[in-house]
Amino acid sequence: MAGENNGEITAPSQVKLFVGMLSQDISLFEQLTGILTNIFGPSDIESPVWSWEHTTYYQEEMGAGLKRKFIFFEKLINPGDIAEIKLKTVELEKQYLNESSGRKINLDPGYLDAAKLVLVSTKNFSHRIYLSNGIYGEVTLIYSGKNYRSLPYTFPDYKTEEYLEVFKKARERYKEQVK
Image 1 (cartoon, rainbow, N blue to C red):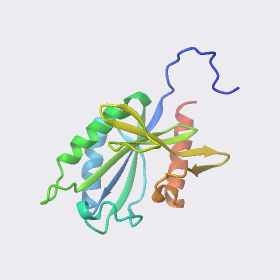
Image 2: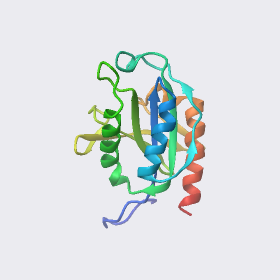
Image 3: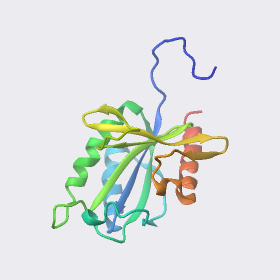
């Protein structure tokens, strides 16, 4: 059976890091991409900038007319590092606050491998597991057959064709990198 190791503890496979950025101010995407690539190394895939109108969850804090962009990093990471990466992005967000102390940009790190896409959050919920330092993880999409499949709790935007195409492109790049 695939993945069987007879109870032996093994090191995890490396995964492809990405950060989803959400903001009204698309100039912050370029600025934060520069900062993130200084921290995590060069990017190898970037999504287009998309309008983000999937929910009003962030509207009070960040305003209307939000845009979304993803950046994927060339250097693969240990998946055990994702909680620390989330803490770094939380600190970066705190450097970009608006007049009412809300965030001007939301940075959502995650990773993918050949089988799944994982997001991390500071918020606990029934489908999330605790990682460390106040950070929770969730499998947001699974790869099955020739496509990503959503789960009952997958965010609506992560189900869109645009996102799925970028994730598939990143998955193909990842598979090339681990050959």
